[in-house]
Image 1 (tube, helix red, strand yellow):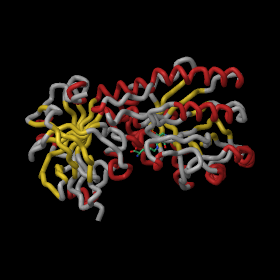
Image 2 (spheres, protein in one colour):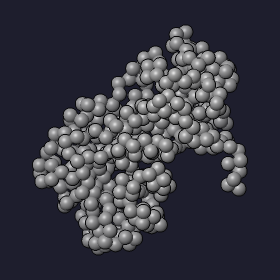
Image 3 (tube, rainbow, N blue to C red):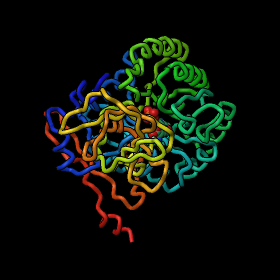
Image 4 (tube, protein in one colour):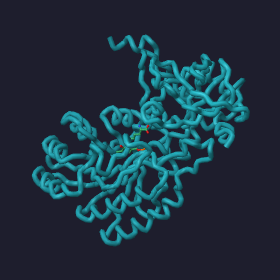
Length: 413
Ligand code: LLP
């Protein structure tokens, strides 16, 4: 693909140069339509049985994006009282929020219980604490299905090498603790990792979780977690997550379970990245170009403070060059490193990347930044976080978060 921006008409007739001038750079730009399409798609992963997708809001907690999930009729999962609060503020009723907790305090559990949000506990110790906080209450437990997958070891959340979930070997203990505090285990959940494009490990994990589910009586729901990847190498025509094929393979696994369990509980999934990643890019300005030891550096204002994924996981994000409001054709390319303004050698958004020859003043568009982009941004080097702007369905622009200011940073002191 020569240009994702042109292929999907990302800016819907708006001139990216005008957006950069109006809101400053770097700036996160979202496309409402693309996000809605992805949210709608995850809502249809299972159609034969009762099912709801929970958008995993850690990927992007902008309230205007949470409102899109609300409007698309999907539910959400939260990882902290902060995320629960943002969801309530966006208009989600408590029963549409699921708190997938990990190493939380009694106060945080109490916060969720008082808000009316169902909590998932992910260790025996936490289940015991929940029993103390909310005796006689309802909750879910997170089970390790023994299979993990993900784009980096750092984001594989099941299998042997992870802090998450309760092992199958400890299930009798779950029942013992539930009995001690008269807890009702209404659901079980899993999450095997993030950003896989091969659905097979996930299908294996679903089958394992359903085998484990046989041991739980009267489950109201079974949640298979998220993790569906997106094609970050789209300019090289990487294939997307094979959603249709995946759905076809998932159905017989569910059929078999429903038959032996005697009823279909509510099935759930928890996709984050898939919903939002492809619906956003960062516009940044080329500030300086230099050669160091034979390597050309295109120095921009998008650094690891704005997008940590390349520095943290060695993640790949496609980059397009924009000049005078138009994407520069991918011809006459040269190899460059795209760097940011942060005081670290690892502050590289793209390494050894073929790009059309860039000039100071051009815009660089970093693609697929809607998930774990702004939500992981920081004011490192005391650089205020950027603005976020939405290109609405009708093509109008809406600022959905203002740029942070240096005064904002001073406000903490
Ligand atoms: N549910 C649970 C319990 C999770 O831990 C996660 C992600 C999700 C759902 C959503 O997974 P997704 O569908 O987005 O893959 N910061 C990393 C990703 C960390 C994911 C952590 N857990 C990155 O930038 O790639």
